[in-house]
Image (cartoon, rainbow, N blue to C red; front, side, top):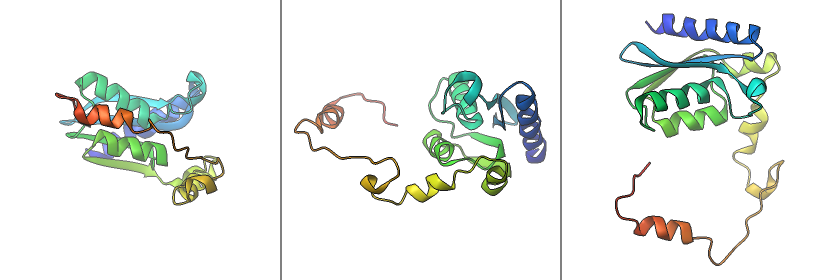
Length: 154
């Protein structure tokens, strides 16, 4: 079944290109049933976070009315980028299958290597400098959260 679901992701990526999206497709499967699928919608949606994996994860969470996909598997036409990788871990998917790798994507003009290179750097040393400012009330949201009874941990 893994090959069949992965082929569906590839077919979705091809269809997505024809329909004005990027060359990526992803689907979320639970109990051998596709519960969500999407192509890359970055340019049509004018949303840099609308990668196929993110879109499929969003749709699956809405379908299941849950923010965790612990019993689900993601099938994607290409190895997930760093942003999608983070979303996969936050969604707690049980597995991921992909067809092309990040080097295949780079050869097609979708090179994420600069992001992988940025991650280990200190925030102020990154290409987009990130500056820490020490404000007296900065920790207030965490203090309120820690005192909140009945919070939903995620």
